[in-house]
Amino acid sequence: MNQQVVVTGIGVTTPLGGDVLSTWRALLAGESGVRALTQEWAAELPVRIAGSLAVDPSEVLEPVKARRMDRCAQVAVVAAREAWRDAGRPELEPERLAVAVGTGIGGALTLLGQNDVRREKGSRRVSPLTIPMLMPNSPAANVGLELGARGGVHTTVSACSSGAEAIALALDLLRAGRVDVVVAGGAEACIHPLPLAGFGQMRALSTRNDEPELASRPFDKARDGFVLSEGSGVMVLERAEFAAARGARVYATLAGAGVTSDGFDMVQPHPEGLGAARSISIALASAGLSPKDISHVNAHATSTPVGDVAEAAAIRSALGSHPVVTAPKASLGHLLGAAGAVEAIATVLAIHHSVVPPTRNVDNADDGVELDIATAPREMTINAAVNDSFGFGGHNVSLVFTKEN
Amino acid sequence: MAEYSNDEIRTELGVILKEIADVNPDEVADEKSFTDDLGVDSLSMMEVVMAAQEKFSVEIPDSDVEQLKTVGDAVAYIEKRL
Image (cartoon, rainbow over all chains, first blue to last red; front, side):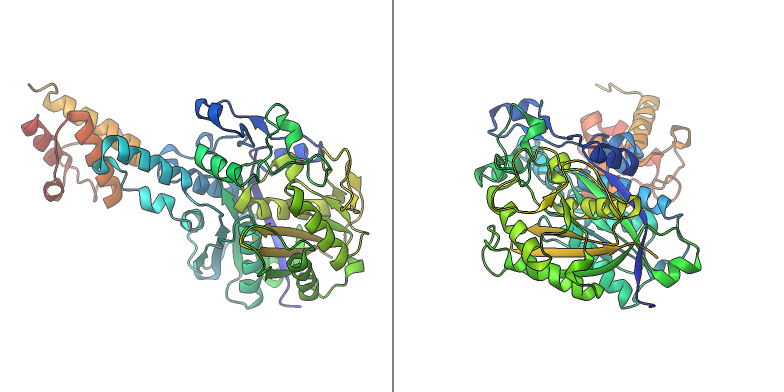
């Protein structure tokens, strides 16, 4: 069993809290991190709600470091520091340490902000840090610099499955024995009028501006789109042998991953969730498990009318309707490229603490759902759980975590 | 119309170096090299130059930046062009 991969450290910064403990507590309590946007620029937008960070990264990072990073790299470093500390700062050769941090959008705030500078003051005023701050590999590269990783720094870019795909990549790297430890996750920070307008024009966002906390309602009949959020989740993954040798505390085993593409449409999921069902089945096979072994699903469910029922169909066809399902975006909003990583961490914590966090705002589950959705915390032993993430472009990523024995 | 004395230029430069590269203001002395003594890398140096141009309303062409190896070089350069 020398190819087993375990989770030994976790870190997040989200609209619910600036670290794992505060985020997990708020998630268990069914709180919402979605608020009305009070910035002046929001006034003219059709969508004026979002899930902004509970703790601004500039309050946590050294000012000189923070000013050299886009906000999406800042959040990655905040989460990575917590995860690394939580893992007990593994000592290893830097050549055996890799990083995989995905992002959906990358340094959009820098790109847009510096373009404003260029227009208003001229190109000679554009910051020389513009490119290293806006490039999408910047969050991963900054985490790599922070930890001195020399075993490869990777960036997965697959829209809202980027963070989960980074974890799937980490599993491959560790199973292949290329490195001993991978710091993996996702980061996103693009609450700005342009992405809000763009997603809004797709009619992808909820316009429940007057009731921000009720806006994100996965699987509910009255759902009308997702809520844009920001943040990061990062986990420390290790070869089980390496973790055992250093006596590391283990949260769970990353037992399998499945990555598929729909080959169907740029932004619409396959109506029956075929690609999603296939990613779940591949992840199960990769873990050596069968559908009956899975007792919990942490769903992608973003609160869009089409996506949630397609995923429900995928879960039913790949697993059946027995797993207890939760949709954390009801509380968190949608962290795009960070969502998969933050939700993978929620899945790990559910296994570790034997409790499924609740899904708020499911007042009337949609007819097409037909799943056992936890609307209150559900205490239960979870031996194996699936975490789904999907992204524009037709990306599907499923991860399987199991209880460590 | 020198708005800044020699000392004031050095002090303001220290403020800029602190903000951009976390340089201890006590370290900012004429003989100190930006790269070797104060740890200012090339990108930070570009930022320092931009900030100095704005602060002192002077033009510092790229071709001149290479000559500005020490704090003293920069103070003298700016003083001459105020």
